[in-house]
View (cartoon, rainbow, N blue to C red):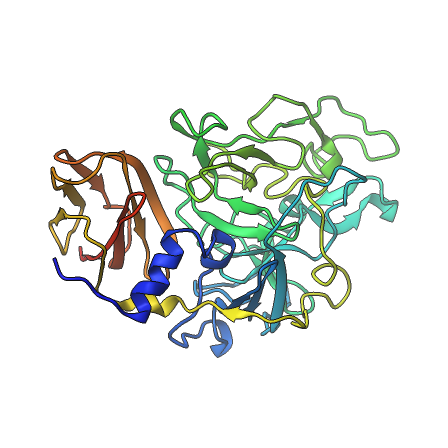
Length: 401
């Protein structure tokens, strides 16, 4: 089989062997100049990285259709954000940092993540804080987002148009990063934190209180039902899969050695479940510049490299793993057959056109056919990446239904 020694193949090999890690490669970068709401450029415009940080530049406008927003007069605008994400996140073993109002992280398309609150409390006393889904849900568009007074489009809850939240058979993709540097995944993960067990929906460990009274707050009634306020829930360790931050330390396809990760939480009907994304405080430490008044406009003062996902456009990258794949183009399934002469225990990944992982399967053996169901994926170009300890082959496939 022919080998391709090009800058692009070198670039892709670097990705494959983790020289470029998920906090660099997981972003949805606009490589075509596509525009969305009000003609504004969509998604992430640029990703730059150093040894210690990743800088994500975005408009805060997604590529999916947004609006209208019932009872919300605000209009989305280009926020021209530059968020700074640490590449070396650490657990905060000191005083925990409360999740603030405003952006608390950034989705993989550059849109802001907000916390579970709407910024107001009962009688403005700061005790019973209003739940954003309960009070503002009427203004959420079909993608469960809305703009704030400053024009900052954001999601308080599961960003249903960003990934397929109906796919309960695969580990959900990384759909964002919190400002402590830890990844945020969709709703589904391995049953066990060590990477074993079936794929299941991750459940929050916050439990709705019972009773009809609230100390120094309104009675539970039709106007203020349970769930109207953040404090209507209590964290009960072990009641669900996740800790008080709405995450857990676990093995993921992107981090096979394990990492702390947050998960969005939804119920069996795909309805958002408190605390929706992050819990009351961050698991890790938070750098300055991303939170607080006028934040999100970081100045880059260190030497950085620009991540260029368009290098994936090469048709084939080959380092001698012999395998067949068919049919191509495909409508539904793809079958992989590794030549009997190849080594055991290979790993296969399916990547989209910008290098984001769709799924990954380990322990692929030679001389055994493997068939993967792709019927839930959109039409377009994807890449099969097959690798062992010393070899790598990438093949382009096309889904055309």
